Length: 290
Image (cartoon, rainbow, N blue to C red; front, side):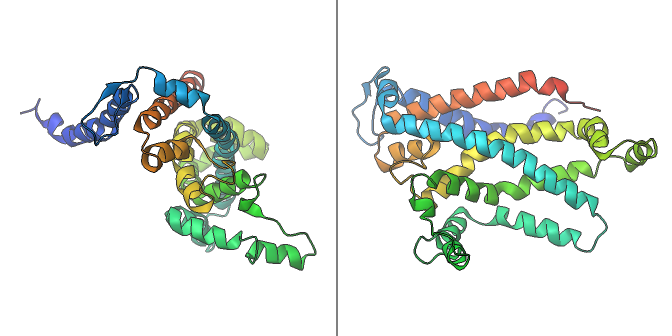
C-alpha cells in the first residue's frame, strides 16, 4: 500500500500531462510528415514537404520575425516593469492604499482576451477612439493606431503587456514579502544605499522567483499574443502584427492545412525548448536556493 499511495496521488497529474501535453506533441510530429486532413480516409506520406513549404512561405518568415520582436520587447518588459511596481508597492506596505494599488494593477489579468481586444479596439479606433480625441484636444495629429502597418505590432504589444502585467507583479510582490526586514535594516544601519541593498540582499534572496518568472514569461508571452492579435488586428494589416502561433492557428483551423500547421508547431516547440535549455544552463546556476 505504501508503494501504491504515491501513484494514487500523482496518477491524475501524470495522465493529464500525457493526454494534454505529450499526446498532442506526438500527434503534431506525426501529422507534420503526413498528407491528411483528419477527415478523409486517405493518408499519404509527405516527408519533409510541409517543412519546405513553411520555410518558403513569406507569411511564415514575417510571422517568425514578428515573434522575435514580440519576445525581445515583451519579455524584458514583463519581467522588469512588474518588478519596479512591486518594489514601489512593497515600499508603501501598511498603507491603506496598498490593496487598491494591487487590485488596480492586477485587474487586467482577469479580463478575457475578447473583452480586452474589444475595449482596446474602441480606445484605438482611428475615427472616434478616445486616444485620437485626446491627440486632437492637444493639437497633435491623429493616428491610425492598430490599422497602421508601422504601429500595429506596437499596439498589440502594448495591449498584451497591459493584459499580462498583473500576474508577474504579484509574484514579485509575494517574493519581496519573504525577505527578512532585519537584514534590510542592518544594511541601512551600516550605511548601504538602496541600490546596493537590492542587488546584494534582496535580489539573491528572491532569485528563485526571478528564475521562475524568467522561464514562465516566455510561455505566457507566446500564449497571450494569440488572443489579442485575433481580436484586435486579425494579424494585419498585411501580416504586420501576425506571429508564429497565430500563423499556426490560421494554417490549421483557418485553411485546414494540418500538415503545415503541425510543421510550424514542431519548429516552435524546438525553438522554445532551446531557449528554455539556455535559461536553465546559463541562469539557474546564479539562483540561490535556501
